[in-house]
Image 1 (cartoon, helix red, strand yellow):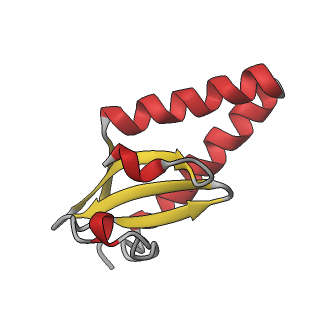
Image 2: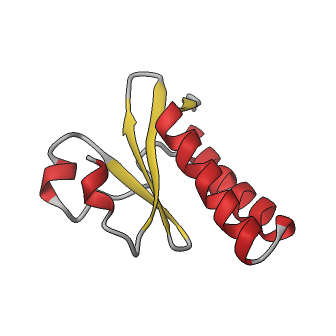
Length: 101
């Protein structure tokens, strides 16, 4: 079975760092490390299962070719290429995340 390369774009790294900062300030460093590890480990599952995520519920996002992978309250938006998966955004599902697009 073919493995896909996963690439987090700058926007996704920035959002992951923001998530970590929020957890550091609200709960502490261990919480920040735990949630970022969990998100990255969930994203890593896409290497072997690129269609593990679902089609986004908002048609304007789905029509752009995005899929969404859910990790607790966070949504990871990605596109599947020939041999690469690009992670565009990581957002809290409770926010107005469609404005990211």
